[in-house]
Amino acid sequence: MSHPQPKTIAIIGAGLAGAACASAFAHAGYSVTVYEQAVTPAAGASGVPMALFAPSVSSDDAPHSRLLRRGVNVLLQELHRLTDAGLLVEGIDWAMTGVLERCIRAEKKLPITWLEPLDPIDLQSIVLGEPYPIRPAGKVQELFHGAAGWVNPMRLIAAWLAHLKIDLKTQARVTDVAVVHSDVVVVACGYQSPELLPELSGVLQPIRGQVEWDASPVRVEPALKLPACPVNGMGHFIQTPNTWVAGATFQRDEMDLTPRDKDVDKNFEKLALLLPELTKPELARIRAESVPWVGVRTAQKNRQPLMMQPDTDQYPHLWVCTGFGSRGLSLAALCASNLLASVEHRLALG
Image 1 (cartoon, one colour):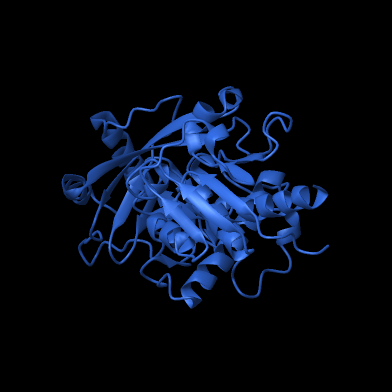
Image 2 (image 1 turned 60 degrees about the vertical axis):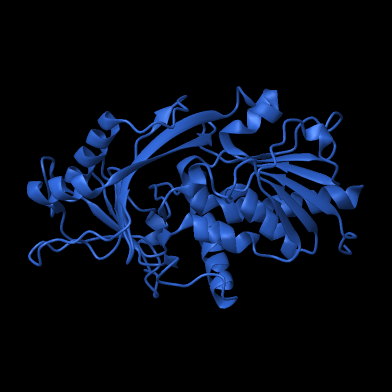
C-alpha cells in the first residue's frame, strides 16, 4: 500500500500516552498538534519524579505478560533512538540497570519454555539462587529482570515532543472534541478522558497514587549495601545518580491530589519490607528528608490498555489511547505504534 497523503493529527493530552502518539505520527510524516490544559507537559500522573520499566512473568506466559514484554522492547528501541538523536542522556535521563523483584506476596514461576536455553545476553528474567532473608516474612524468592530499568518520564515526554512536525499548545483545555478541526483526533488525557467521551466513564477507573522521593540519592553507611538496581515487589525503590523514589499507593476511584500522612506511613512500611538492608535509623532519616508526590492514573478493570475508535458514525475521525494504569512507561510506545498502524489502515480504507 502506498503511504497516505499527509494528514493533520490532533492529540488531547501531553502525558506519556499523548507524547508517544505525537512522536509516532510525526515520524510517519503527519503534522501533529498536541493540546495540553496545563502550563507544561507531563502535568498529571506522567510527571512522577522517576519510574520503572520492567516485564511481568507468569508460569503460563499469559497475554498480559507477553504484552508488557513487547512493550518494554519497543520502549528500549525508543530510548536508544532518542539518545542517539541527542535528546536523552543515558545514565542521567534513563538507564537499563535491570530490576530486582522480591516476591514478597507470592512465589512466581517462569514459563517452562524459558528454562532452557537461557538468554545469552542476560535480558531474560531469571530466578536468583538462594531465597532472600527478609523481615518479617522469612525468606522470599528473588527474580532479576535484565530488560528493565528506570526513566525520568518528564525527560522522555519532552524528547518525544521535540519534533519539528509537532506543535505543542499548553494551557489549551479542550472541552468538546467536536471543536477540534483535524483529520484525526486522539483522546489521550488519562482519567479525564470521560469528560470528553462520557461513554468511557464505565470503562475507565481513576487510581490515585502517592510516592515519597527526594532530589538527591540516598546516602547510607558503607556497611549498609543497597542493591545496585531498582527493587520492586512491595511497592518499589528506585535510586538514580540524582534522586530516589519509593512507593506507591494504589487507591481506586480516588482523585484527591492532596498528600496524606497515612500514605507516607504505608509507603515506608512497604520500604521496610522491601529493603531490609535499611536500619530503622536510616529509614527515619530518609523519611525526614523526603517529600510526597501524588498523581492520578487510569486503568481498565482488566488491566489492559484502552486503544479504540468510539462510535464511528458520530465520531468518524476520533480515537482513544489511554488506560495504562501503573504501566504507562512500559506500554506507551507500543500502543502509540499500534494506534498509528490502525489509523493508517482506516485512512487507507477511506
